[in-house]
Image (cartoon, rainbow, N blue to C red):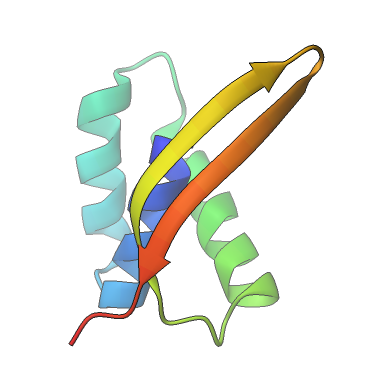
Length: 78
């Protein structure tokens, strides 16, 4: 979820895909294909939420059996 929030905020801020990927890859290490993950998350943001300019400030998850409840705090920057 944190990776998704980093990508989302990068898109909202207009950060180039390469910079988002570099930042995210440092945190994920080499076990994850960072460029592919970033590309898929950017495509999802652009196709489903293109008009949503909010930044994500916090993300929390809670496991409830086989389901995960996601809570996110977001808002507009001035």
